[in-house]
Image 1 (spheres, rainbow, N blue to C red):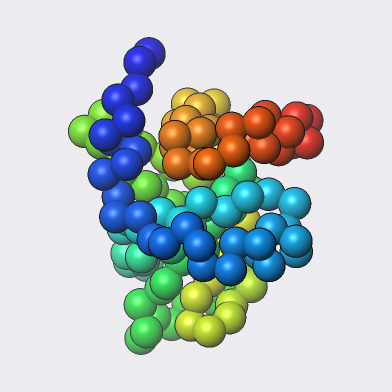
Image 2: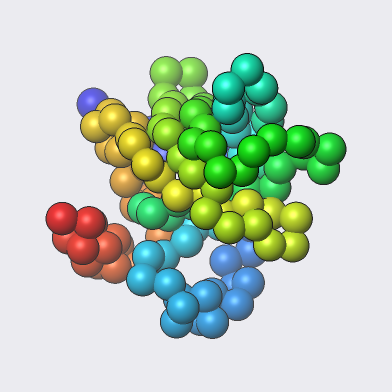
Length: 138
């Protein structure tokens, strides 16, 4: 299946210079600044969050301010990148800081993982780094 970079680049991207050197020193996986809306579901509750950045290990999101949920429960999420392209996964809220949540992938299907890889590949400045990170996933 061929992907059109416009699907992935359509999200309004943040400035990639946001202390990326400091962040990459602490993390073993590159985070790609990418702005989009994601849908989340936990139990009977559903809401949308603003995606701030994404990596092979998870994502950083800005949840609604008035949301009252048990952050220990895994959640479902969906990120729609184009008409027929989306990423669906089970995530857990790994940390909360500055009003944002760091989400960790728990389960992601093969098709969604392919879309995630392509999204990162099209938005990274160093494709060889993506290859290394993919090999670390095993």
